[in-house]
Image (cartoon, rainbow, N blue to C red; front, side, top):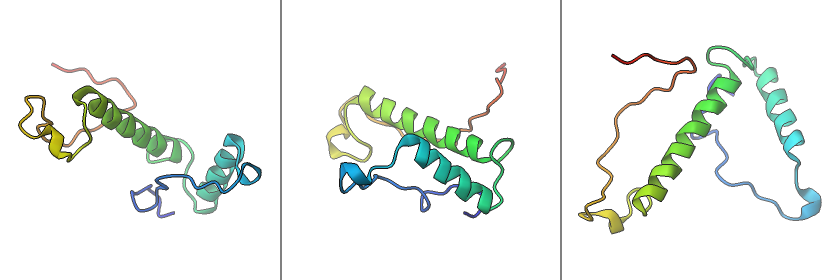
Length: 102
């Protein structure tokens, strides 16, 4: 690990050959924590594993939510000029502490 989780480092889909080879959630978490510790990545705090995983989880959940809402996948031609099109994105930043908007 380079200190941060990148798209390149992420596993998109788990591959399970048989039920006997399946890894439990507890084993998967233990493997992730061991790997992070061996690379010197903090588990908690600013830039830590927990913060990075939370960020990735929320971004993925929000992307899935908008896909469900508009009814088509990102970059799908079905949505072009449909009246319910995705209109692009801007840089959004998630903060673990509440932000007060004015």
